[in-house]
Length: 250
Image (cartoon, rainbow, N blue to C red; front, side, top):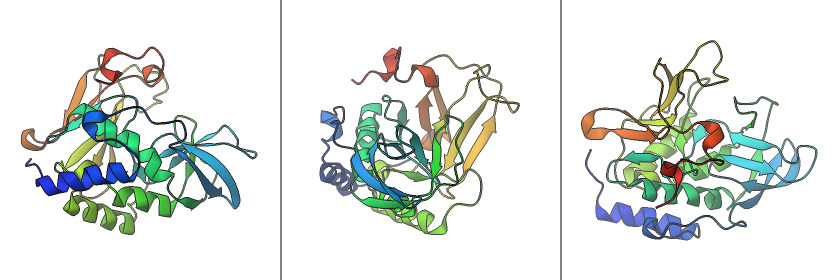
């Protein structure tokens, strides 16, 4: 996979700066106020705190304290430098990931929910304008899990990839792992272990079953050698407590 032109990388850095974030070389943890925003959820305006580019915490009302996950998109992990592809280092992609909350908080979004939850107990929220803003800025990728991807979102992603903004500034791997599950991990259900992989061309989020047992911090890669994308495995319960060395920022 070839790196995009230097001008494309500058676009990515400009996007981070516009969101109030330093360049990857000066990556730091987000300020507590960076992700504060507001959404209109099922007709009720509520203040929220964006935890990253696809998850927010509801701060008032009957759902206060609940976390909601954007439907149809996926942002990079903020728990540590776990992603790697193309010319990016883990620290550089982590800096982009940590800038995504500010991008998400930059607007007031209308969202809806049918009360459904993901496997982590987060409310699934459909927020079309928020998803489009994040995808256009290269701070989220299209990830359709339970149906076809949104055509408008996929078109926005292709424009972002051509422009080389955000996470696409150093190339577009054909596949990116978005979540990893080790065999024997609790809560997997009858289908067992699987890895979720985003197809960056079609927006499909494909579950790939396997029987492997991953070591903590093991790097799992997908795609051809010249265009490989990788992610480090860390169990969910250790991403924020008892953090392993691979999650500590350089």
